[in-house]
Image 1 (tube, helix red, strand yellow):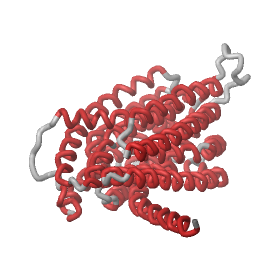
Image 2 (cartoon, rainbow, N blue to C red):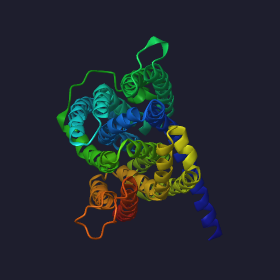
Image 3 (cartoon, rainbow, N blue to C red):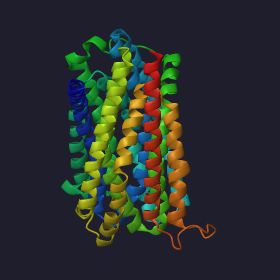
Length: 463
């Protein structure tokens, strides 16, 4: 028994080390990517509350579109990981080329959808200047969407080959570019016009194209991609292959949409409470998104690790890998919850110099601390499930958690409709919506853990 426990602890240490080695470059890359949004919010927050509110509204649309697209493109992670695990490297170039065709179509659709979504601003009670700035923000930043979809296709390909450091370097370069161009255009340095929120959009949109160019350049030069090099020949779209990718990827996109749209819907719904509430809500949401990148990186690594194990025909190891990843993510959730709760005032102060916005942001960050455990658990569990090439059931769980549980509770508490006798006496505004998010994430985490346990046991029983 003692020897068995020792061997199991040794196996856990090996897996933790393997997952961390895969995830940490992605973590830095993800933090750098989200850091672009953090820089946008922080830098406009020191221009004016109106510019910060415009970025908040524009980012609510941008976040929905870009995260949904990221989910749709994530099918390539599982597909390439399974081929690597099975030792069938010759199939990978075809998969990557078809993923790039898929990326082109998804990028164009996302561009159109983002621009059409700005008409939602006409139905909100907004200051005209804020509405116009937010609309222009989306129009400008959406030029980067086709580049982003292609970048995510190559990102998933590289990750599944255990090549994650290139994305880290590219994302850090993109962050530096974003901050520098923000400094030039948001504040109008070096004789350039002071564009505020629109300057952020220009920096991010152009930066995404530069990141795609850097990724293609790296793949063309690095030896790690030679056995699976995708640019050896021209290949037209294979609609059957693209359809298979969409069948796997669209449920992931809907899953991501369910979560991010719930958060973005909160941004739109709290707009009626004024600029201060909008700005404070965006700060809390922005920092939560930054922290979320850690468990998300563990999750992306889990898709690769689980996919490799299943490709090798070892479902017992796939289950072991899954639970180690969930435990790692949960451990980080405990640390982040403690940090946010203790440092919420300092976090708010880093974003804005407005006293009212700072005070409300600190209050909302308490709710962000509350849902760290469930948020970290649900993203790890859902990612492990995707490693099994199962995507529809997690999609249904997320739709239920956020649109059946989270938003209805948020609307009751945040808006307090007079016709609901069990609602609060007065609207809780943003705080009510964040309570709804806590409930929704808890439901999602519980159901996904149950599904992962059932799925992994069934795969072992089948073998």
